[in-house]
Length: 475
Image 1: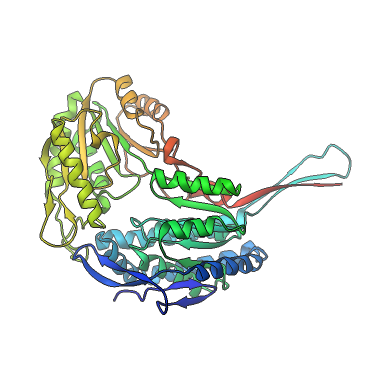
Image 2 (image 1 turned 180 degrees about the vertical axis):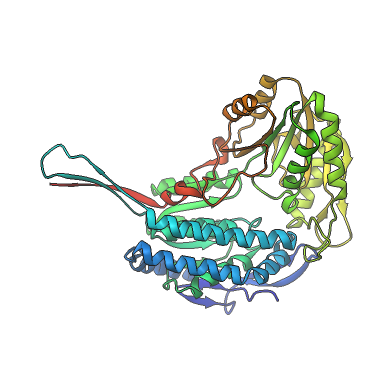
């Protein structure tokens, strides 16, 4: 059932013959699924050459015809959704329902960008002289190098490269070596839809080696990266040496503010479901919970009951509601966070330890009575641990929520339209959901501020990230 792991370069699928590689592990069992080949330096050069040739073909293809190919890829992804979702669960761990939803959402993203690519409009500016025309047109930025992590094996890479393709660019993408099959199956949908050879190339390898090779190539004019702040800063520096455009979607530590006029039980149910999605391994996962004193106890009780009711297990099991963490590194990180919280006076009211004797499972965890300078309140946990602390006033909670250098997503709950407006204005983040947990849709911009990065994916902003604006003066 698992995918034959291969590179995809210039329309050709390339296996492991003569290539070093690494094992891909099922996080629910800790056992190897397959061996993934790494691209050689020659493979990377071939991918870059293929992208350069593919760019000439694809940029000259009309937006109308590009859209037809992309729409067909979306249809193929929907047809293959059950197969793709199963593969994703095997290599990443998320429950099958979440994997299937990710696949279908990804198909929606493809559809939206396919249509928006047909509307990459310019504009006419009134001329100053008779018979003059002043025009602004949008052109593809060029060859794109994209780099994606393991937590969303299909959605994250596709959201990057489909926007580039819709704009007329060609792409070399390096997806995660820990979860390669999802991206392979996504690329296969585009290849089977008739995308010309060389327009979309997929490689794997040692991340630092591949990124430095691709970003250093003169032909690459744009990079897009999703991952940690330190790595993002390093790649941004490499891009700056060649004056290459960059989109950086980096880490966060999303505050949740629950005001005293909100329904604490309903708020807890909505935000807990979001917290434990994909075992908390989501860049926009709610991670710091500030609850106003008058509803604090009720919120903590309902949230804790929700966490305790989660059924841990293999994501392929229909009764499982939360799967394993993606790798053993995350288990070690969770234990370190819990130990630090305990040493700082934190009270573990749910979970707090590893689960089972195989795989990388960690219990859904709730911790209270934490100081704001504890590790859990200052470092993104990227796992199923929720700290819940009380607050008194609006100004106090805004200061605490904005105190970190991150600004990706935020959440708030209130029954007051005035408070909703105020908190929406006051929170420093690229996205904020008020009375819901939805901060991302195909048609909306996705991106952060401060050290959470710059640039956007999704929406018209995500398409324009892959275009150059050219002014044409015609007399």
